[in-house]
Image (tube, rainbow over all chains, first blue to last red; front, side, top):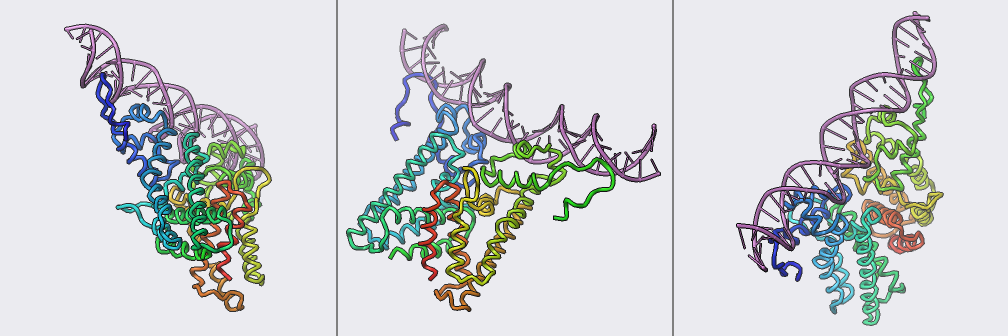
Amino acid sequence: MISNTVKPVRGRPKTLDRDHVLDVAMDSYWKDNIGNLSLNEICRRSGVSKPGLYREFSNEDGLMKAVLIRYQEQVLEPVQQMLNSDVPFREALDNLISFATSVNCHDESPNGCLFIKMRESRVHLGKETQAQIDFLEKQGLVFFKKWVERSKTKGEFSVDMSSEFVATYIDAQLSNASTQLARGVAPETVKKILLVAFSVLE
Amino acid sequence: MISNTVKPVRGRPKTLDRDHVLDVAMDSYWKDNIGNLSLNEICRRSGVSKPGLYREFSNEDGLMKAVLIRYQEQVLEPVQQMLNSDVPFREALDNLISFATSVNCHDESPNGCLFIKMRESRVHLGKETQAQIDFLEKQGLVFFKKWVERSKTKGEFSVDMSSEFVATYIDAQLSNASTQLARGVAPETVKKILLVAFSVLE
DNA sequence: AAATTAAAATACCGAGTGGTACAAAATGAT
DNA sequence: ATCATTTTGTACCACTCGGTATTTTAATTT
């Protein structure tokens, strides 16, 4: 948050609100089809001129990467912190299910996890965005793995599976839930499926 | 397959090979991002002029619907027939896993199920295609449900879940597998995940 | 041979894309 | 007041999209 407080000594004062643009862009990518969502549309929605957007984010790739970083900070990090706390495994798993199936938006529109959504269309995004996706994926898997390992040492997890695989399995099931929510499947149904899929972990 | 044998009495003879266009289109939609794949590109790949394609399929929506129907006939139907046979539940489930994780293409490129891929981007497709997707989805769920019910009466399936939910669960897991394959996850990993996810069904 | 019929492809349409050149505007420094 | 500096937005670029009007070509019928 240091970026917006530094003011240049001379020149026309900046009016572009970086955070506002990122909010609008994040919301847009989240709700609409990423591939069909143009920069023009984001400019329209955020009330920013196209050159202004390019000056701030270089190009579409830069904007998407910035959106992903913001998403990590605002949405993913709290979940990871929850996993890092001393919540018992089963309870943390339930929290995870709640996170994954919570309808996070005030209005209608599709839901799901923006990161997973972008990961699914990874190949068609820019290089910077791809790298950020890969980074978040790797980081997420490491988090899951460490969490499982900690739970094993605490004796809360005794299924005979490698922590690595369990992390992959959880990631897969959460991805599935996100995809289904985005498709419009009822959250209760998604929740039921997650419960059954995770029932093998105890 | 009657469509191509009827020959008009007069006029310039037809040279457009409908099946060839459908093959190319199916392959293209399967491997590439559907949203980024233009009719121009399909014309280029199939060696057909654009008006030719429009004469045959009316528009993009018509082509996609035709592709979906072809996919159902060529890929989905054999699977459903397998489920309709008297194969024991567990064996049929294993077959299903094999189907879902088989790398079906000669060359590199992404894999997965085209139907599931199109279902995921349903909202952005044409009306006819949407209707076809809905039809195939409903039909698939009915198939799964009947299969589970038959297995229950045969005593091969004794888990306490409604056949309806089991059908939904299986559909969800297969969708997940398809999405992962399309994303480039190793088929063996996908297979492992499916095995674990389906282990609750026995 | 002429007329009819149908399918062929070229060449175009308006709209939208990601991206940029450029001049007006707004400030501080001289 | 003028200059230097920075941000602003208009207006444009080449390109691609889905879709079509139009003319040419190849066959049968008369």
